[in-house]
Amino acid sequence: MAPTTDLQPTAGGTEAADRVADVLLLFSRADGALGVSEIARTLKLSKAVVHRILQSLGSRGLLSTVDASGSYVLGPAAIGMGNKAWGQLDFRSIAAPVLRQLRDDTRETTTLSVLMNHSRLYVDQFESPQEIKMVVDIGARHPLHSGASSRAMIAFLPESYVEEAVAALRQSKPDFNEAEYRQLLETVRRDGYATSYNERNIGAASIAAPFFDKTGNVLGAISSCGPIFRFTSADTAGHAAKVTAAAREITRLLAR
Image (cartoon, rainbow, N blue to C red; front, side):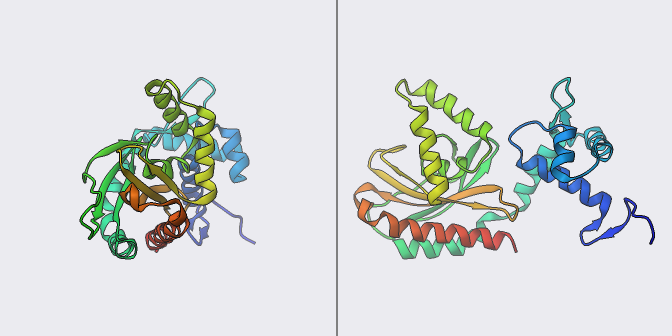
């Protein structure tokens, strides 16, 4: 039997290429810096192989060292690639039919938000046909710490995002309760959706659910929003089921 080399063909290309891709994907899902030993253990690779990969990625700006221990985080080149990918992926055209149908089913305004660094950005909406309705400013950025769409996203982001939100809320709200906030995020993870009532705007209500890429990374959120008097607690479960089903459909379409 011929010896296995880094150029051995695999279903994905070559073993060498597969290993590099696996390392980069591992960093994309990590909460913080990663070291050689942790990567080797997680991916079941030798430390020597991991070290060579890290050195190569680091030399190209895809990874950066963070301290004397030799731990790495994603570098500026990787961030630039991520921003380029956002520009090339047309979320609006993919999500539009789903959002339009959700608007028709709920008769409330539906919105599409995407994750942009440490904030979210409204990129599309379909307005309610009713006279009294909610509308959002397309292109407006919002922090990830407040609002249903933001919570639907941050609940599935790494811990560093949650800590950043906690710090911002603690600074802006003297009576902020971190334990209650973290429990709220746990509820979002459990139920798959977030709600808000009189939170960012008085008299407004929203139900939001996240959508993901095919590897499970949260990309954004959709919401159904309107005046609070039409969002009764008795109807929350049924309304939320429609929103979460629409978010799952967007996730499915993005994975094709």
